[in-house]
Amino acid sequence: MRNFVFSLLNTIRDIPYLRGWRRGGISYWKWRARKFGAHSVLNLGHGTIEFEKVTEQQKLQLYPWFRRQLTGKERLVMDFGCGPGRFTGDLAEMIHGNAVGIDPIRDLLAQAPARSGVEYKQMEQGTIPLVDGSVDVAWVCLVLGGIQGNELVRAVREIERVLKPDGLLFLVENTSDKEDGPYWKFRTVSQYTAMFPGRNLVHLHDYEDLGERISILSGRH
Image 1 (spheres, rainbow, N blue to C red):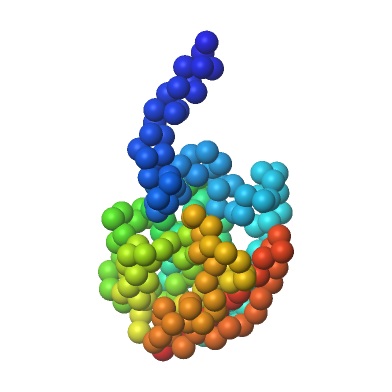
Image 2 (cartoon, one colour):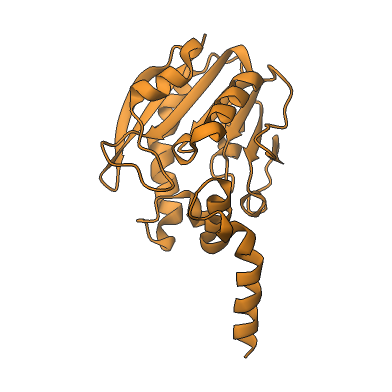
């Protein structure tokens, strides 16, 4: 009986998110975070016990390319869509500065580890809680594919707003030749470069995850 009551309470708590489940958007991702926890930020084709292994594999693929783009003058990096902060602390360490993790989902931010030089902020109503031109680097890893429509337009505009004119945009997205799903859009490299016309994004490298192509792009003004 006790387990039934807990289950019922959880269902009631999720009703606001489930109402928006079919149409996607932030409601779906909030529901997904409640259901799968930190694992929700991965391709769910990976088993729950693979969370640490997949994260380490991603770091091996991404970090060498990221380091090559740095000038040594960067002092603040934004981890946009940081989720449970899998990369945020390492980013601060790699630039020998500070990092701020930004995410709209409180449940994921609550799981982010505390580290020196790192803070986490919740993004509300599509607005990044940072001042204009304050960020040296914007790290965006497998985030934009889960955003569409006006929310995508707003996200791109906000990233550009907080990133310094000569700042670095490091973008990682799934560019597989697949049909879009209800909650994920498979866009091309050209589509992503077109979103940030002033950043001169360069396609650096591809790697594979569960048979899908993940592309790494980077650029500055």
